[in-house]
Length: 94
Image (cartoon, rainbow, N blue to C red; front, side, top):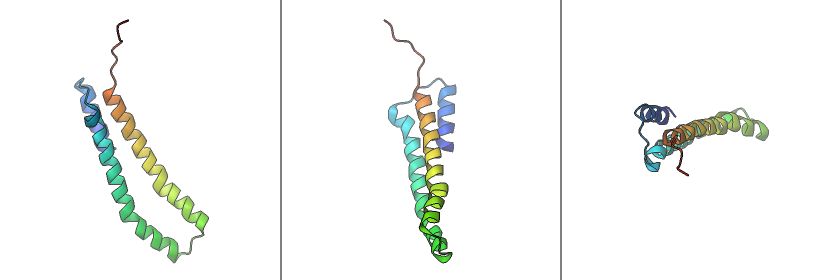
């Protein structure tokens, strides 16, 4: 999210409209980083959940709170910055 925001702000300041790939590649990079982080952190979480014998509902709520919601927030904000960097204020003739 930091990379896509920084790139988008710099492009907006330069009044540069990037291509679709150039705007959305940082979002893909953010998604790949999140998948990697979740893959690395899932096993320790699973070990803790099994050690403390969490009930299924508590494990689901914890995964929702520490996994799904932050991942969605990062991807939404990255997507917003990508879309904002491609936005033009030009009115079409006609």
